[in-house]
Image (cartoon, rainbow, N blue to C red; front, side, top):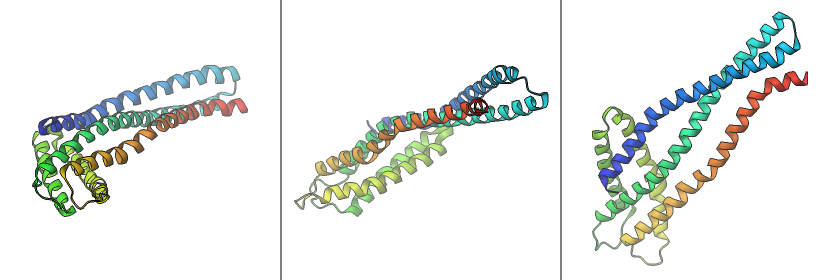
Length: 231
């Protein structure tokens, strides 16, 4: 990817993160409330009508159950939406971050003289800040309505890459037996650290998030039925 493609990718990412999330939040909350209404109707027909309790007790129970299912239906919709957006955006961000890292690497390498043998960490940081600042400025200029939102998030991404990625790159470079650090050494360290630090911990937890979301939803929706069944 070149600079223009990098900017286009992240602008589309941030627009969908803002506008797409609002659309999905409405949809998931609507589904959660719909499931809540359906469950209330099932509870009324299968539990209260069969039990034939007093009117005041049935009114009390249906009120409590309505608050329970509508509240947790809405809450579970928000949680499910958050998880779905997070998982989708993490996968998209991982791909974009790898492309961003590759581009930043090439730009930093190109700004270091080819004949320079020893590259201090301060110079790497300076070149990184220059490249990141130029990219951030271009992104804000083309961001339109979401420019401020995109700029804030992208600046956070650049800072995270700087402090968590750049330090590890330097650490990888210090493992060399020889005193010379070449452009190829920097690129190799970037790719190795980027894969180990960012991708593995995130992808390992995606399946656990799916399981936790399903278990919590089933527990809260089955709890009123279970309590009355035990009684």
